[in-house]
Image 1 (cartoon, one colour):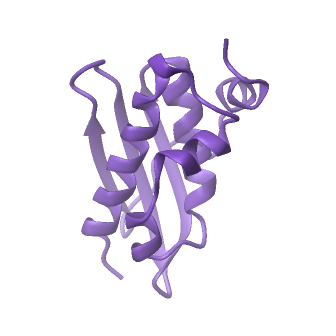
Image 2: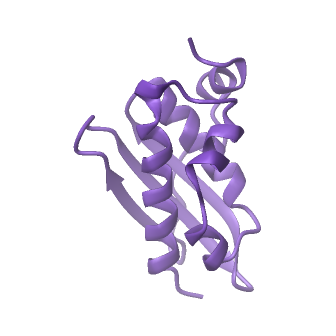
Image 3: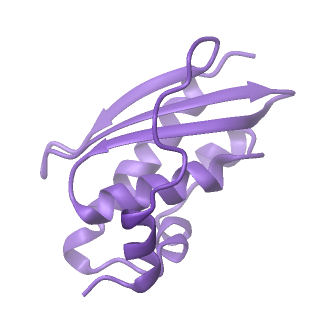
Length: 119
């Protein structure tokens, strides 16, 4: 059973889409479940000023992508690299054991954006 917060992010996802250059856009996937995350971030003054996401995957991955896009705003590259599963789980009101892969997908995306980011 998904939390109400997770379902809210799923039904009304925030920041859906992709940002045009000079934003950084990356794609990450979870080979175990097949979920795909495209993440875009625009950096200004070394912090994320805008973030967008697109997910092809399960309810939990869509909700987690939405929560991730909100969490990223105002974060530095170092903070993106420090993203943990607990942060994502808290942002969606918890994840069932079978859905924990959604947090891993978000962590992979945040770290890829941090590595790829150019000011």
